[in-house]
Image 1 (cartoon, rainbow, N blue to C red):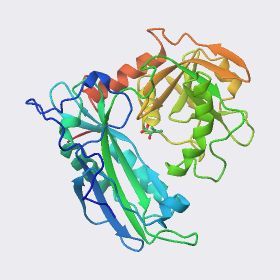
Image 2 (cartoon, rainbow, N blue to C red):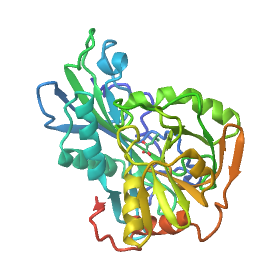
Image 3 (cartoon, helix red, strand yellow):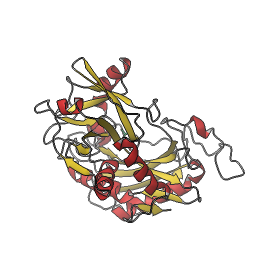
Length: 356
Ligand code: COI
């Protein structure tokens, strides 16, 4: 049950400035958690559907020690951003895609899920309730984190009798400490992220903790993130622990296909669509790690990460560097098309932008 009583870090008392913004130093934002004012909570039991939720002050939630999510990891998360445009408009990007992905994931882990409309409405409400935390244009965005959790108590392995859909929000800017600078990726050859028939293709919370050890190790050795290979052959690139990956060779853009072991990123899908519409050749196919090492360029995409070039890849002790800073790189060209749609400089012909 969500507790409204003793939020540990409710930000409601945070200084409010005259101009409608929270008084924080927007230039210091990274991807750390900044607690905001409200969160959205909606509950239902196993044999029901979600009906109505509400905004409550941001704070801790109370769970049974036997909650399915705590014991057996029955939980999904999503991530999307509310942005403030120069003209003051507040927008979301393709929130329907996050809603659909949550519905697919919920089916995989036996949970009821909000409808697409309920999801989008809840995201809008959460963004508006925390409006003063949406950064000024160009200073970042308000990251919205929907959770779908099996919060009911179980002891034997079974779906929870009760579910909670919750959304909290935090203003964010760059995910990596590198900012938008090129990433140094370590190709992981000991641990796998996902296997055939598993849950790697849905945003299950259980996909992330097993990645902490390889990530910690890579970071300790100076790398930005870990790139996983397919678990069957160990030959093909799959995804980075926080984002999808693209490879460019002779102006052909390639990315591994999302067939169950790779998280189908909304940014990934959008970049593929934008590239095709702008006349670039795009291939979704298996990419051997050697191909990555011989590529002209590589870049990563994700909601949190947005688009960042890969500066180097290290595989079995061999490091390859890319000309990632080239102003004419595919990453830069696609990024300006992608961000143009988000900030309104390029007309949104596909209904990707949702005004709130
Ligand atoms: C996102 O990009 O929104 C994600 O959920 C990735 C997460 C690992 C930060």
